[in-house]
Image (cartoon, rainbow over all chains, first blue to last red; front, side, top):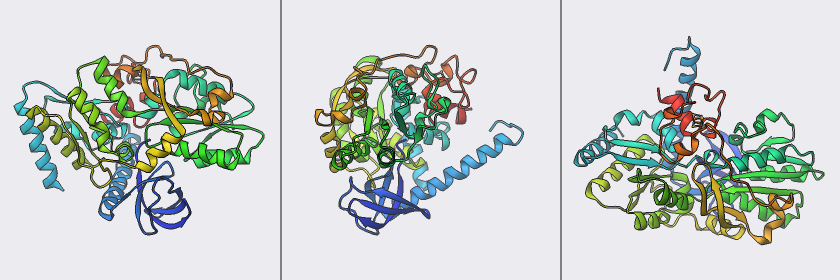
Length: 86
Length: 353
Ligand code: SF4
C-alpha cells in the first residue's frame, strides 16, 4: 500500500494534474507538492504526488516495475505449468 | 550496479564477522519485506544477520475491532462503503467485505474517488475506510477538507490511520529486545523526513536507516546498519537521497495536522499504543464515521488462532504459526498478514520456499 510510482506531469490545473507513467495516464492531485511544474517527475501514491524525483531515479524505478511484472509473470507460469515448486 | 551490490555484500559480511551475536534487523515496511524476498536478498546474507518483518503493512496492523466495525457499516442499507482494495479480503466476524457481495461496497483508487461517490449518491452516506500510515493519511485529510469546502454532507471516514514512529518506540519499549536496528520505510519517510527517527535513536540507541526498494539500496541499507552495530554506534542515515530529505514533505504534514490529532488506539498484536493512531479533530467531527453512527470507539479485539500479532512484533517467523500453509494460504487467508500482498505471511508463502 505504501509503494509509490514515478510519473511525469503533463498538465496542471490548480491542484489537479495529469501524469504519465510508462504510457499510462492518470488524473492526480498535487495538493501535497504545490511547487510542481509541468515536465517534473513526481512519486505518486494513492492518487497524490508526494515528492519530486529526478529523471535517473524515476528511470530506475520504472525498470524495477517492469522487472517485478516479468517476475510475477514467470512465477505464475511456473505455478500453472504442472505445479512445479518454484 | 553489480559492483555496488558486491561492495554492499562484502561490507555486510565484514561487519557481521566482527559481531559475535545475531544481528536482528526489522524491516518496518511491508514493501521492503516483499522486495527482500523477490530479490532473493536473504540468501546473500551471513548466518548471524536476521531480518524480521515489522508492523509496516497497513492492513496487517489494523485491529480486528476496526475490521468488524467496517463490516457492520458495510451492511447498512443507507451506506456505501469505499475502501482501498487491500481491505477487501481481510476476515472479520461477519466474513470479509468481499464475501458480503454487496454492490454498495466499492474499491477506490483514491480518496477523490470516494468523495465523487458521495456526490453521485446523495441518498446514501459514503463511509471511507481510512487506513494506512503517513503516506495515505494526507489524501484522507484533503478529502475531508474538500468535503467541508464543497458542502458534501453525506461523506465520512472511519479513521484507522496510524503513526509509524510511536509504533517503533512501543516495539522497543515493551514487547521485546530482539530488534537491534530498523530498516526504515522509503515512502513513509518521504512524508516524515529521516529526522523523524531521531527520537528512536536517541531514546533506544538503535540505528535507523532509510532505504528505497531496489536490491542495491536494500543491501546498502543493511550494510550501513551492520557497520553501525559493529561499531557500537546508532545514527539515523538515509540512502534514499533521491526522494527522502531530512525534513520530509512539510506541506503534507501540515495538511495532516490540520485535520487529524493523535489518540490512543489498538494495533493488531501490539495492543493500544498511546498517541499512535489518528482521529479527526473536533472541527471535522461531522465527517467522523464513529460519531455519525453514534458509536463510542472501536473495540480492541483479537482473532483466535492467528499469530499475526506475534509476526508483526518480530517474535516469530510466519512458518512458526501452526496454521501457516495448512489452513491459512493466500487463497484462503485466516489473518491479514496472509491477505495483504505486503503481509509477511503472504511474502513467506509466495517466495519463502
Ligand atoms: S499464517 Fe495465517 S493465521 Fe498464521 S499468522 Fe499468518 S495470517 Fe495469521
